[in-house]
Length: 76
Image (cartoon, rainbow, N blue to C red; front, side, top):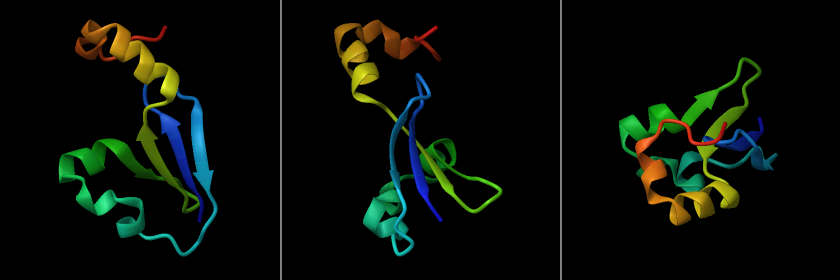
């Protein structure tokens, strides 16, 4: 089982963990609300975990342009 982190805005890969012994507490997933967990964490057919996060570039864009928070998608 691998854990893949992808940016929810641009889709770029942020990182990947190949550690089989990682659990939700080590990742901090247990601190998410049910709504956050449903929108950020998904599982692939082959047993991998996909976590939606934000990359540094998109975070910088949001900081420079706070009105982007109102948009569902700001990267075209």
